[in-house]
Amino acid sequence: MVKQLGLPTIRHPRPYKLQWLNDSGEGKVNKHVLVSFCIGKYEDEILCDIVSMQAGHLLLGSPWQFDRRVKYDGFTNKNSFVLNQRIITLVLLTLKEVHKDQVRLQKKSEQNRRVKKRERLKKKREKRQ
Image (cartoon, rainbow, N blue to C red; front, side, top):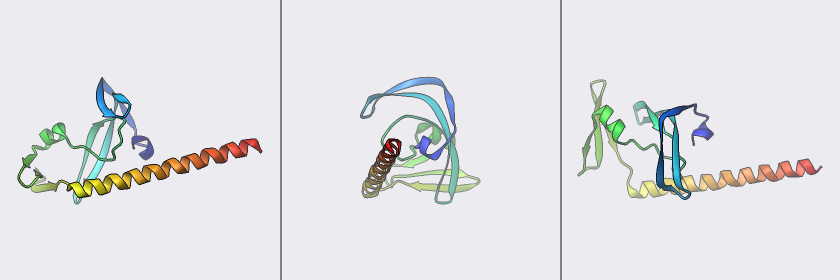
C-alpha cells in the first residue's frame, strides 16, 4: 500500500523482525512512513512501521492510544479521547463490516494482479514484433 500510494519512507532507527504476520513467515521492519488519515471529522497523522501484510487497514495500537490518552470502553467497543477541547469517539467496525471490507480488498487486489499480468503480456507481444 505504501508503494501504491507513493508515500515517502524513512529508515527505521531500530529495525526488528516479526513472525507469523503474513504467508511468508517472517517479516522485517526496517522503514517508517508518516501517514495522514481521517475518520469522519477527525484528522491525524501517525508514524507507522512498514511491514508486508495482506491488509489495507491502519492499526491504531498502543503508541497512538498512549499519545492521545485514549479511553477504551469494552462494553460499547468504543475509543474516546479529547482533541482541541472536543471529545472524539471512534466506533470500531462490526465483524460484518470487516468481512465486507476484506472481500472488497481481495477483489481489488485480484483485479490489480490481472491488470498487471495483461500489461506484462502486452509488453512481451510488443517485444516480439
